[in-house]
Image (tube, rainbow, N blue to C red; front, side):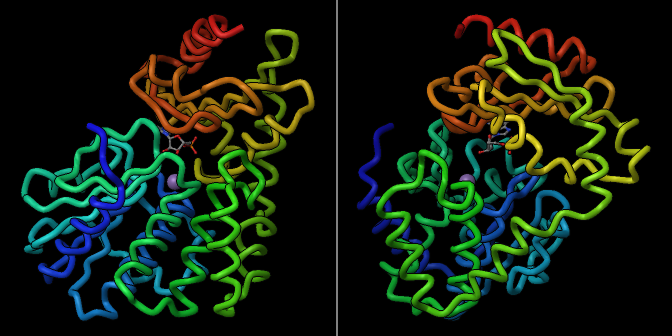
Amino acid sequence: MINNIESEFDLGIDLIKNNKNIGIASHVNPDGDNLGSILALGNALEKINKKVFMFKSDDIPTNFSFLPNIDKIMDYDDTIELDLFIALDVSDENRLGKNKVFLEKIENIINIDHHISNTNFGSINIVDSNAAATGELVYKLISKMGIIIDKDIASCIYTSISSDTGSFMYDNTTSETHEIAAELIKLGIDKSNININLYQNRSIQKTKLFIKVLETLKFYHDNKVGIIQVTQDMLNNSNAKMEDTEGIISFIREIDSVEIAVLLKEIKEEDIKVSMRSKKYVDVAEICANFDGGGHIRAAGCTINQPINMAEKLILEQIKKVF
Ligand code: 5GP
Ligand code: MN
């Protein structure tokens, strides 16, 4: 389905105006774009007297506790009667985890996202793969609705955009990304505090886990592919959590020869979450699509239900095809 994005914005705004009880849910493994978008939109809608329920689909990593109003994000509760459900940064229905039930219960669904692989599962789909972050689309929506963006909302949008652009470094960063960021800075956000929380806040435990994980690094295809593994044993030995691996894959991509970085996370023995990043030319969303995953050209993921070494072998077989 090809959407005219402007008319989808207009239809979305009508739906928001005409409904009172609005649910917004995170995706599983929520990241900065997801949480920032939820809090920005949730708080903006409260300003126009909507009753807003922000639901989590997973635990929220503690490094995001600095986000204004993060405590408003509550546990899933399907007894709450909603008139409208908004999914943010959710590429497909399954990414909603337990909050997926709302898609069946509620007729009015607004799907706001920037993943190229988005399945357009909403009744209204504000989906734009040219947006660097879902936060950019939330910024446009709030602005179009004429809601005043206060410092808290601005901080959340800035977090969204900074997170998904690798602090304005990745290819997805556009002139518009910078224009929106400039507007947010003009609103007086504490950019330095956000940056410290996002990028200069690694715990010692997490650093020790990084050391262990980096020891697993293996190279393939003339060092163009770098693969690392995190097992449950490593987490137990460093007293760390799986969320503590956040950021380590960037470290692998930063190696000069590397085009594709792969992180294999052992959630359970035969439940391997794969993260993939590329630098210049490989479409990793396409590679992950072979395993029912997806994402963006330069950042994607999937799940493989095999032991970790078998998952690595299967991933390498697909990667081989691109070289
Ligand atoms: P991460 O590696 O940080 O978990 O995810 C990177 C990107 O890939 C994110 O934009 C995320 O939405 C997407 N992604 C990760 N895992 C999956 C998956 O299993 N399915 C799909 N469709 N996208 C995923
Ligand atoms: Mn995103």
